[in-house]
Image (cartoon, rainbow, N blue to C red; front, side, top):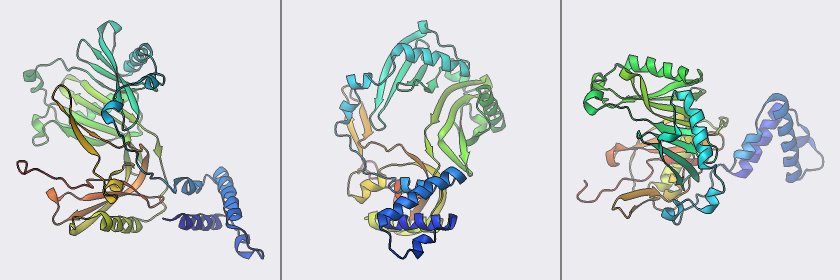
Length: 372
């Protein structure tokens, strides 16, 4: 959607909310700048009085921006002096971990700590303290905010013992809900995902993975969620991660039909393999902005690279920074007759602006002769 179209939409919305017939009846034409200035003033006034957020359209008209490439990814993994100036100290990280872990009935003793190190994620400019204990427990603290992001604790069982800890789906769901209450999470968190270590035969499953997410207009937000790995038979949560990213609960201002047409047009541009469209599925979703469609459209690689580290381990990474913004969008999945594994391309079409703000499975999978 062009700026001109957006400006027109803003003015039309304003006219519906308040009678600004003067815009059409002025004997002396107003300049575009003056009209937009007046529109902005009315937007602010309406927003304050009635809670109407048309101003969001102005703010959101350029949701997607050109992604920044990380030129020296391996170097960027190293924590430098500038990074250290922006993070809390090790002592503060430990103290915050001790305090927050009480919520999960975990006692972290400083005498048990074996190692504390900083880990850096260049894609999100994130730095994390990893606190490891003699018991092989690991606790992850956001080095900027001091917030606990996840933990892993050893279950203390042998393989033979843990394989006997089977539970039914009903047992796990009830116990997981009780754990959320025990941890102090409210009813705004609802079960959005359930799986286990043996999905082919749940009766033999002993470890379950459950995500509780906040819900907006019937849509689960996985970026505001609590995910746990739980062994119901011994009533133990062995792993837990918390996501609480800012969510721009942007309004729906384009229709599903418009979003589908936008996705189809984008697909015509980037479908250079000439895959034959079979059918299209669409749903509203909460997604993270990503550069996949941009990279494909501009003839760039998918961003993934692999290097061999000093210990001989192959390390794969993405060379582009992620926007990090979480938005409501239409997820438009286009299926084809002749694509590897029958995977669709999914386009994220912002439901406010109509911009394509990312996607999933945009690049085709390629295999060597020995991998087919």
